[in-house]
Amino acid sequence: MTSDMAAPVVVGVDGSEIALQAVRAAAREAATRRLPLRIVHAFIWPLMRVPLGPAPGAPADGGLRNQAQRYVDEAVAEAGKAAPEVTVDGAVVEGAASGVLLAESRAAALVVLGSRGLGGFAGLLLGSTAVQVSAHADCPVLVVRGEPPANGPVVVGVDGSELSRQAVGFAFEEAARRDTELVAVHAWLYPTPAGPGDILPLVYDLDAFREQEERVLAESVAEWSERHPEVTVRQRLVRGSPGRALVEQSRTAQLVVVGARGRGPLGGLLLGSVSHAVLHHAESPVAIVRKPRTV
Image (cartoon, rainbow, N blue to C red; front, side, top):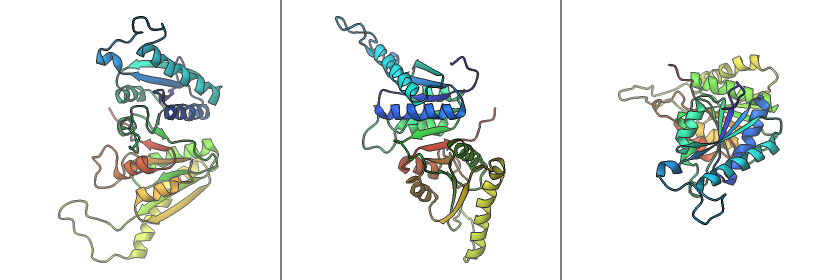
């Protein structure tokens, strides 16, 4: 690890242009947080028991291990261009990408990934590494897509849960660092049964139900507004699908923040339906905030 005692921003690289976009974003995140940057390439080939060095008669700089080091060196150089003030550490770490990055997340402030790398299929919306790391990491995960608008807002999904509260706090901090406004989105639908045998009223007072959801939204941002009075907040109450509402907001956002799970009936899922939908369909970078684990 870096000699700096502060938890680093960690970014995974694989030699793809998408990974270099993630490196530039990670360098900027490290700069705004005043943290070091750690660039990691997961080197899986030793596990496959294949030759790692140059082939007989090939140039001395050939072979898989040298190629892996070139991926890291290129990424370190790219990070230096994006944020020259950031201390950068690069490493080739043996193991599969998901496992390596999850291990790195235990001591990281943030893990940054491209949406898809060299191992991905062009038809997939999101690479398997990004999904697995977002679902299991011990710190927030930022999945990068392209270059977002610099003047766009930070958008956060709100549902009143404890994990949503943490996502709102993360979003406020990001909006403050980026000197931009925050858009807090709470989407609501009529209640649905959470389990077999649940009895729901046949008729709802729509106005009363809407007022209740307005309170959820207002209370969710009130605490963090007091902590960050410099952040302008817009509250958006939307009747409809939460995932769809956040994807729509992502079109003009520089970042969308969601909790890994909300208060829905499928709480056992590693990634809730909303965070899963946003990860796959958002048009901006997405930050996934997980509840800290207790030992």
